[in-house]
Length: 236
Image 1 (cartoon, rainbow, N blue to C red):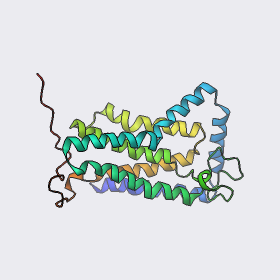
Image 2 (image 1 turned 90 degrees about the vertical axis):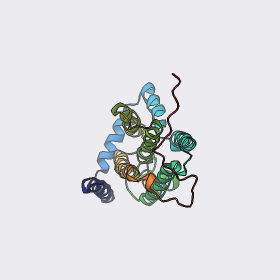
Image 3 (image 1 turned 45 degrees about the horizontal axis):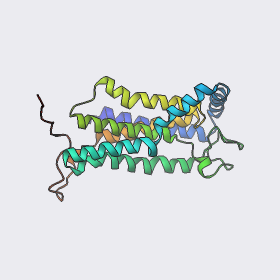
Image 4 (image 1 turned 180 degrees about the vertical axis):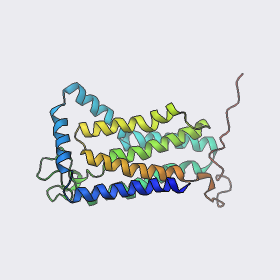
């Protein structure tokens, strides 16, 4: 990977750190509140419930992880290689050690919180599940897991995704989540921006891993490549 792409990763981390520092110092909080107030004032029932349903595109335990598990199992069966589980494991571990701990550390309430100082980081009035808004797990997790789903689909197809397929899997669901997560009041605007920055960084790391080059000499029967997928015989 060229230095240019590593520079992008560094910029993503720097942008996340800078946004976090800005919020800690009390900036952009009024902006967050204004966006949330506008969203709460423009929620007719049909639009609101449509947004709530579409927001399920970011449910890790109910949608993204089950789909990833199914695709992983299929790829493992097709390739007879333990390497097929590595993308799933990498995504699980990276999101587990980053997004969750950051949420606990930031201690920020969501827009629907009824207590005082709800836009502030390290809110002393919010605890537990009520203080885990920053960064947005919807955004961070969705970028990582849709990236893994795209990787698994492309590997099962035995070819790179087309531009349309890439857009439908990796871009459109995340864009819908960004809008609906803010509109429904699950997260502040800056929560979602932070989630995008962190999620992009993590998914780029996963995309960069050379799965077929990881040494697995201790598994002589299950260490084959996952890129070399046997194609089904033609029925013609």
